[in-house]
Image (cartoon, rainbow, N blue to C red; front, side, top):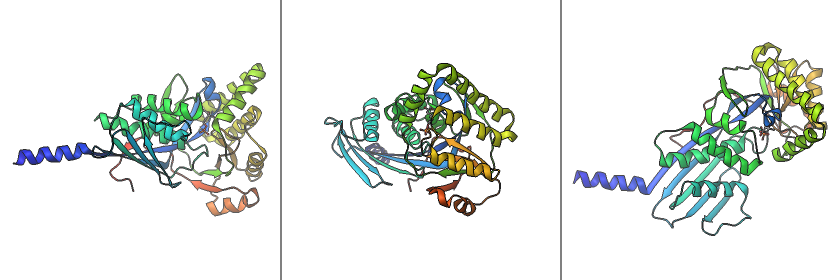
Length: 331
Ligand code: PMV
């Protein structure tokens, strides 16, 4: 009797497999864009996370996916045999992973995120890593981060073309990393008084990467110097972290030369400079977020300082947090 009961419990569990994972957003401290060309960049994970709940139900119609993006209140019901090209890219990414893992059963995916979308803080990478993480843990008991990271990179390519892989790597492994296309080294890089300033200006990583590509193609010698100088900023930051303010300023000047700054960003960085603070774009630029070393200024003092710049939000976040992890609860 007991044996039969155990078998029944086992079957019920298989019928309703439930996995919850989360992974963090990120800040590129120095080296964005140059990293696309094989240079080193310094990146840290942040205490804003995306959460994903995966529920498999063998009692519901096969080859179907219900998706609930809870922050934007968008729901999708997908029949995997009748896919439409008009589906948003994140839905296409889910279908790609469903097929990759040769799933057949009904899946419910619930997604919620603390990471602002499209602001350069790694929301798409956290989504890609959690997506792969859920399906991976459905079929494996151990978490192989290398395998998850490689597949998450393929999902990132759906979103961004041919990204450097820095975003999915930091979201998978967490902590802080010196990253290039050839290597990945963990580093214990700690920062005090780092604020994120969200300009609220929408940006497209793909468009910014293309803009830099055309600058590099049309100005090869000058571009090589700029990309090398950006890498020098990264190396100096690692070797002499006390020089961080100068490095932020220098790196921002170089990003401007690549063409990814704009009037609004220039005004913010100039104002920081006037107040003996320092800031730079983090991520692709053209909008999105800046990072700034703000000494002892509070969030309110920063909001007041930038009241004429129409910024959207200021955040203070924890840096160097845990990467992809399994969670007990979704909410
Ligand atoms: O998508 P974002 O804003 O986090 O920027 C990614 C960083 C880039 O260096 C601009 C692109 C890349 O693939 O590394």
